[in-house]
Image 1: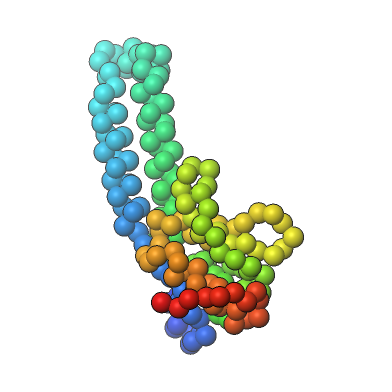
Image 2: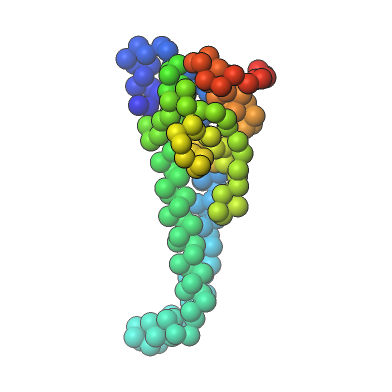
Length: 171
């Protein structure tokens, strides 16, 4: 449920822990657009369309692979764009990341910073559900504030619901 919908319905128990921002996504989309334009301008478009196609496919394969990679990164960033206005929030029982993901606070054991497959750091939840996998809460570059504040906010909410009690610092 979006935060504005919760407030319109009078759900005042919702506590916002952090807000996600869109600035990095706009910058990356601009960089992808510029790089795609530069790579497309370097393609050899001369001759008739069939000769130009064969030259691009067989003569400039590295350039086409670069264009495909830029388009892949751009698609990933557009996927992240859906979460740009989300909030990390809780209602005393459940932790929410926008409308896309939720976890019971009683099962959250810790919040850690981990590096993913692409080398991007993210905040991950250690959830006590008999699996060895941590759940991604949010990428660090999407956070509006420092990750320590988000971790402390989540762990404070966990402590209030009766989960694992840890020392939490409040800023």
